[in-house]
Length: 147
Image (spheres, helix red, strand yellow):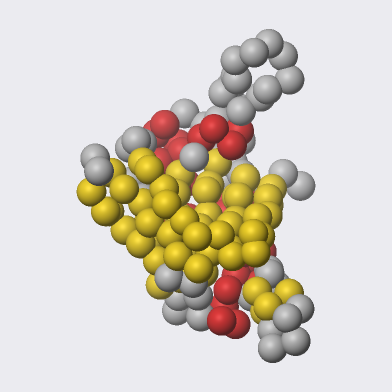
């Protein structure tokens, strides 16, 4: 499971040219789910995301987590994070979970995130989405649960 985190001042997801969800300061997370992923991957990534110190403290050092700042999270499913680009000129998605498994794990990821006291918003699994964001920093991080 791969989570691409973007520290944002704001982010919005649009579906069919309509604003579907938006957040203020926090994290825009693109989540890629692989065919071998499980609840252990979800637990690992959620713990890492909640405690990952990537927000600036009053000395301008990355020393605070999303939980520390009570930031918001916008979670977007993105199977393309699992693309294999080593051979040829077109990506292969054989490492991505099948849609049924991916949607189940995505929904479980949301359920676990909702156990926090943070504001959690999402895109729509499988939909064509447009994302608008104001990246803070810019600061972008890739987390991988592949132990």
